[in-house]
Length: 280
Ligand SMILES: C[S@@+](CC[C@H](N)C(=O)[O-])C[C@H]1O[C@@H](n2cnc3c(N)ncnc32)[C@H](O)[C@@H]1O
Image (tube, rainbow, N blue to C red; front, side, top):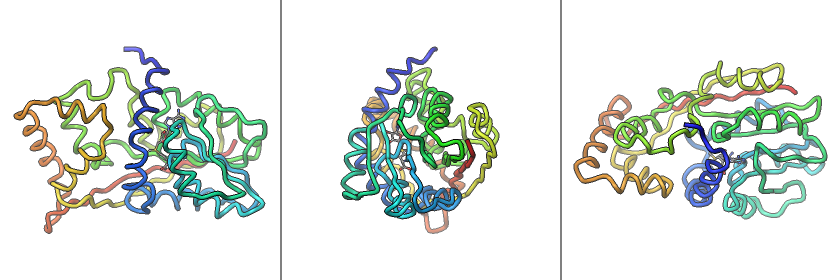
């Protein structure tokens, strides 16, 4: 089925507006699990004082905040995201600073009059229905000498935090995600990520992989928190399951997490993250 990009993006905006406060609290503001990537990304990019940086799909500003400290007063960092709520949180969390700003922009359509030294994008490329368009747009808004840093999750099997639940859910609810939605896993290998970025015309592409660990507590904690943090349209689908299907689902997830369950009954998931750097 052909995906309607406008509808997909609209749905994503609604979801992120709803989820942003919970996302910020549980993930972005905490340097744990996959979010250890933020400092790795900053290190790999070698950001200098005076650099002008765009942090694309900045969400609540976790990467933006770290970049601001690097560019100093002579530099500047702009965070851009389609979610109004995420931007509001980012502004509040970062406070008012002379070398920092936040704007509502769509990765596939923004255009600035002055190009940037660096453009970063953490955990968002896979949300852009036309990632190629976004990458070409990034290239256009980058100085000739500019560089990019893109962070994505590894493939499903390498991120059992997601797959332990999603494998079981999508078997019971095949339309859990709207049919035709882009595969969120499609840049989860070094070659697929590199290939997409190369296609957009970037050079000197390097992809490094990291395996972080994340402990979501016991199985009951993991399950309860999923239901608590999941976006409304998905929660509604889970709530619509009858009792026996709910039970079946929970048992299937319980089975899936067994390989990651420690003696003390808590779960320890490996979490693969890929970080790409490239030059214009
Ligand atoms: C997982 S969050 C990542 C946020 C932030 N980079 C971080 O590391 O915490 C994904 C973000 O992508 C944003 N997003 C999704 N589609 C977008 C688009 N087309 N243009 C700009 N931002 C988009 C969402 O609103 C959300 O804030």
